[in-house]
Image 1 (cartoon, rainbow, N blue to C red):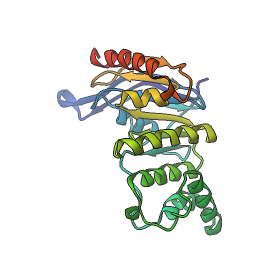
Image 2: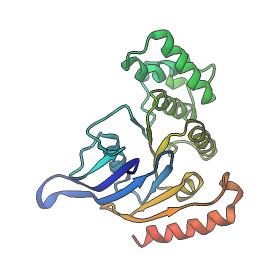
Image 3: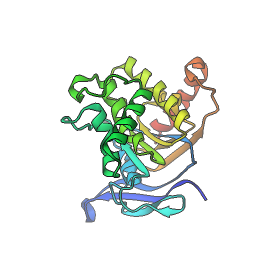
Image 4: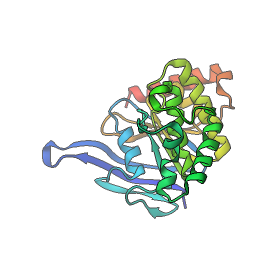
Length: 248
């Protein structure tokens, strides 16, 4: 039995001849503890796929299973981090991280302690009392990831989370994500349209075709980490995957 299975997922918006088909018969399996990246051109349905796995969208056909059980709606075992930070502007960094814990019924003192601990692991000790507008873009995204991790999900879903930051911050956040993934042992499904980012992060890369999205190819990567030390191999893979996307 696979850990996370996407079985024949199709998604159409609208009805009849005018319906827009975003995804068509997408099937894939994510292993427990794996960092899988879904890659494809803009508009191919990557975000839609992630929202279906998160339970925020209902597929037109197909199903998603976690540990063999069908996913029906949102559940705390799956958390989604968006491209935009989506922090509550009226809450501090610490309060944002603690928000989900409050919904779970955790007491105030325990919530504060948990938020302080996880923000420290994200390199944000001392920033707990600042509001989102007082933080840099990279810091805000770290808070968003910390909030997702605070509820201890089985699956962490990331929708182009580093697309809105500058190149240097993006590099740092990629390295931070790998450190967090290794430390927490979470299963990660990460969406991007950046081939180099996919190569730096993924255990496996799934390439979707242009809309409607279908699985074009799936590649397992055996390049040792840190991968920035293996530029020749990265360049070769980049050319190979770019060809897959172009002909899709």
